[in-house]
Length: 446
View 1 (cartoon, rainbow, N blue to C red):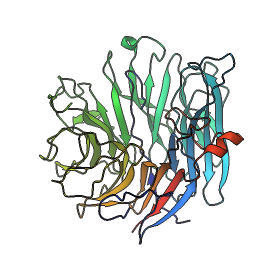
View 2 (view 1 turned 90 degrees about the vertical axis):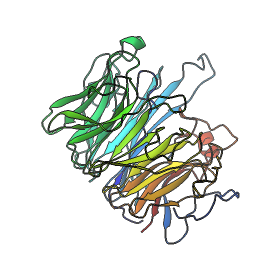
View 3 (view 1 turned 90 degrees about the horizontal axis):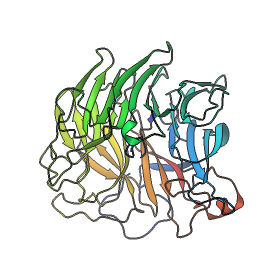
């Protein structure tokens, strides 16, 4: 298997009202349906896992994958459909030997939580959020942050809270710092809940509160940590600088050295566009931010569709990366370490003249695209029958990992919360109905 440099997995975080929830093909999209993703020469493609996890992260050389999945096996006997039993599982996968080791597992009933996993560049440290009790210190079943040391195989509990959920951890390159969210009232009224973004130094144990929401509907709609853990980009409708009195969701950059915010965007809500921004992604040195927005920063988004933008902090310039139709749907995006290559998943034929109306496909036909900021060129990586999403990219931009789901007319047994079987569920029925093309793929492109 090719040995990628560092692959940085960035999730696009989506929140409900009070908690964090939610390449080289030229020409137009082909109408034929392919069974597996394909990439033209000179790229190579390899399937490295059969899993379709909620969250995944890779080590520096691609030899290890950390996976987080959530499955629901609903029983018809004496159990309402509204009260299923959930199983969250965390794995460490050796991609070269194709051997899997379970880090933690927990089964519970009630409200479904979203498991999340992150890994340092070396693959020696894994952090994950879980409602389980892998260390014997989480008897109350809160969603807490745990650390797994791959070398010593020791699990430790990082957060300890009461009546709170801690979730969405991200880790810096050397595994010394993590950022995560805490909801202070996960089972109370919406108007009583508060979400706190925290930066934690794992070496010293010191925690810094970066931002705190006030009353509903204030929230944090995604965040990202740079390579050395000194800067955080976040999307929020809070007024963190005194310049967001109208409460639109803006992009902010927080500096750990000065503990101050810089407001990157300043949108105005109109009838055409919401004025909101989501899911910021920082490059390693914290000088470039990629995010979603409905704004019209460079006069190329008149219809107010949700597009991907790049902001260069040094040059103080915006670049619109995508040009989709009004209902354009994105399936995640990531950026190389130097910020010159951006990979994303989209459901449209983007390789047409900008003045030509886009063709929106169904939601089961999402493909992977790569944008090069040096050449301002867009290339399409995949052509598959299923949905390609959650792309990640190596530090040098030559390795792209992504997940593929082939949507079947048959309802998959053990389906997870977003309707797809995670691949880690067991049982003969699950294995029989699972699409063999689904999984995590690695594309190598110079």
